[in-house]
Image: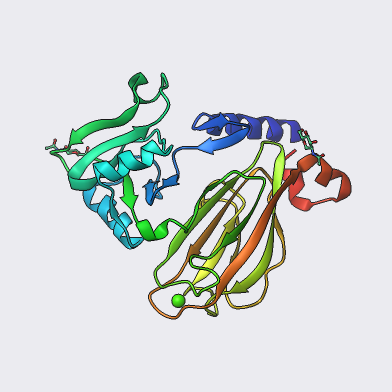
Length: 267
Ligand SMILES: *[C@@H]1O[C@H](CO)[C@@H](O)[C@H](O)[C@H]1NC(C)=O
Ligand SMILES: *[C@@H]1O[C@H](CO)[C@@H](O)[C@H](O)[C@H]1NC(C)=O
Ligand SMILES: [Ca+2]
């Protein structure tokens, strides 16, 4: 029974891996969110290619940004923004930025792969947004160790922020989050402003906690080599913000020193 479960898990992991690529020893998921120069890619919560033009505009607007222009997308591409998924950008145009030519993506070409201005705005694609103020807010982090701060820290964060940090360290490593400072608008259910932590490469699965108030949360340890942090602030009342440090460590070391309930789900 256990063996069957293990095989099933392995099978679904392999299936999942097809959407991912492996780069510099780091798993990279091109379908969720990448960010450069204020430009970022978004897909619907329902999955890839689910946004009409109108919905795409709403996604960017909700996060305080707007659809990226062709020039913004190209500027981001020049500094390494590479996403293998077609999305809406300014004025009903659809395309995606390719830095490195690949057989399965971009028809072997480099540049903005341009599907042109779509006449049918009900077509469903992903989206490319632009929000210069979100530069210091989120991103894809692959360093073995780094400090993550709320936008503007040590100043108070502002209203209507939404940041996603995707941490991806080497395969076989795990991630420890240690909170250094924490002060986020207090609310009974953390419905106003909050920091959420996911033991996953996105904010759909692996929910590990939602935090607000000024109580310093305990350390959080991932089960795999990826973690996602999401910070959201609403339209009123701000606070001091937060500062935390993540550190990658070898999973094998951990298993020798401790027993960790969730570790069982890995092996
Ligand atoms: C526009 O696109 C939608 C979604 O792909 C499709 O259902 C619809 O038939 C298209 N409309 C026209 C006029 O082609
Ligand atoms: C962690 O694993 C890597 C690769 O397996 C190894 O090179 C490194 O020395 C290990 N680090 C520690 C602290 O054991
Ligand atoms: Ca607030």
